Structures are given as structure tokens and as C-alpha cells.
Length: 229
Image (cartoon, rainbow, N blue to C red):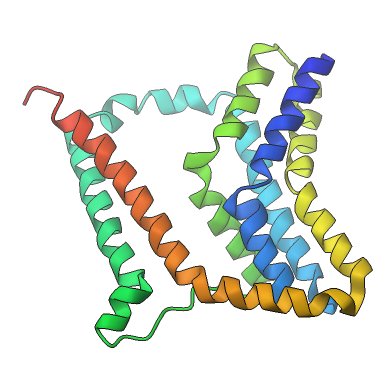
């Protein structure tokens, strides 16, 4: 395993560390949890890391070969019609999440905040966030590609995957450490940031859902109108 490969994997892991599931949700949890309960965040981070690690192991072992067997079905016209319907449904849902849309109709604004609960809740939250990010694991897939083309054996790529997932959550671990070191001095600023995130969470979720819907629609329309009937 070369230095260049290690540096490339580290860079990709740092890019992955800025995703919704590895930074945004954990940051909200840092703000929502008092210091004695911060250990619950470690349950969330462990869940996300374990999910990424297992997905990486599956990819390295060649699950992609099995998935290729379903490629013809997934590329069929009915599959793209279903994708188009799903995209439209997400657009409709995004409007229903939008605070302005709800305000015009006299509906209360949704507070889309990660639920802070016990270990089971943190595990479910971690799994949900990780599953939703599967389609956007571009840096991770690139890392898998690097290890595959480098011809690494299991004794090499297994610890490399473990190190990748650790680097991926390193920034939020640093933030947790800074909060612990700063003590009460940082709490007022964290509280203001928490209120801001809470206020804008529904709007951000609305935009995120709409973007996913648009991407699904665009991909489906491109296929459906470029293929002969």
C-alpha cells in the first residue's frame, strides 16, 4: 500500500466527513444534548461508521457482480416510470414540508429535528441517515475503486476501510472535544446555533427532498424520451 494511496483515501474520507449524516446531524445532536448525555452521539456515530464499513466490505467482496444480474430489470421502461412517479411524489412532499406553503394554508410549521433518545433511537437515526446517503456515497465509492484497482488483499483493505470510517467522523469528534474543553463558556453560542438550525430545519428538508425528486425526474425523463416505444 503506497503513500499516495493512503493520502488519496484520507482526502476522500475528509470529503465524506462533511456529509449530512456525518456532520450536519451529529452537529445538531451535539447542540441538542447536554454534556452528560453526549455519549449517545457516539452510538449514532458508531452506527453510521459500522454501516459504511459493512457496505465497503460488501462492495469489496463483489456484491456489485450480483447486482449486475438485476441491471436489465432496473434499466427497463417500467422501472423508469416508477422512478418518475417517485420523483413527482417527492416534489409534492417537498411543498408540504415547506414552511411558507404550510403557513398560507394555516398549517403549523413542521419541526424536523433529529429525535434525541436512548441507544435504540440513536441506532435507528444512524441507520436512517446512512441508508439515505447510499446514493450519494461518491467519495466512498471512489475510495473503493482506488483500493480495488490497487489490488489490495483483504488483510490490507479491511484495516484501510476501518481507518477510512474513523477519519470520516474525525471532524465531529474534534467538535465534541472542543465543546468538552470549552465548558460553559461555549454554551450560549451553541444554544443560539441550535435555535437557528431548528428554525430552518423544515425549509432545508423541503429543499433537499425537492432536489432528490428533480434528479429522479430528470433521469427518468431522459431515459423514457430517448428510448423508442
